[in-house]
Length: 365
Image (cartoon, rainbow, N blue to C red):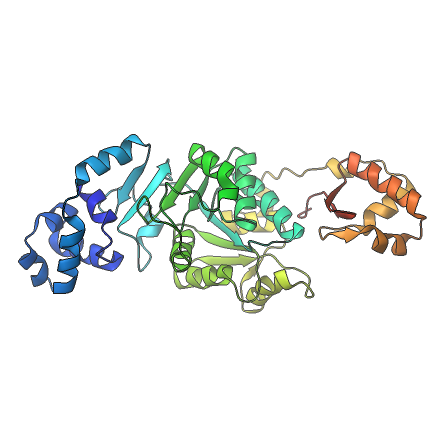
């Protein structure tokens, strides 16, 4: 109960909580100490003591903790062996982590996947596919449950029945964004929702950079799947480098705004995601020849007619309009639309906007 009380107190910063526990031995010792003893540590001043006194007045932390546990949530503190070891090693680990689900095991291999909220079809497809593949190989996927790349990464891991963890920029009892409510419900069954913020804390802008350091901190490597040149994903990449984590980036076309960030990271020395196999080789430190690689050969087995193959080859993982394709292939509109409809029925193409289609196949083949 004492670690819970110390963790939920907002009067003390994460640094003050860590330092007080290091100095006094435990959360219990901190919370049972007289105000004079706390002042004598030199770690907090009279103003902090005043705020602390006001925050603790009239609260029954024992009842709060019982209600918290009854609702299905847990807490792990720096005093517990179950605290994630990689996270413990970063310069500014939170004293306590509130969670719903199951904490990662000591031997779990955690890989972070981050990227743009307003991602392209290319980025979303790549994130889903790569997360699914890595989960199949036994890696656990970590992200922030945001829209776009984050959600796609969690989804890919879940599709493989793998483990996935979401760090939230709010209390674990708050689903943000609401559009990802299905993920919010599903992730605790295959991992955990995790946060340094106690129940009831709503998301605000300044919490997101703080949250991002935990996504990278708990992971062996960070994969940036798509990002603008100035974005939160690049902040996460910087934090990962400061924490000594490997950073990988998915390249994109130089004309695409959503790939500027990744291409910039690669230019600055980030490792490039060239294929699933080479990435897996790096992450496992094994030669590719010794790995069991399951390649989806669905599209190698298609038997397309000449015109169908011509139309299919015009599409890629970026949305493309019918008019543009017609100019490339020179077919009349009715014939082209008939072929596109057939390719959609076969699962080769997908309409993402009105008369805008993308190829549905593996990006990493």
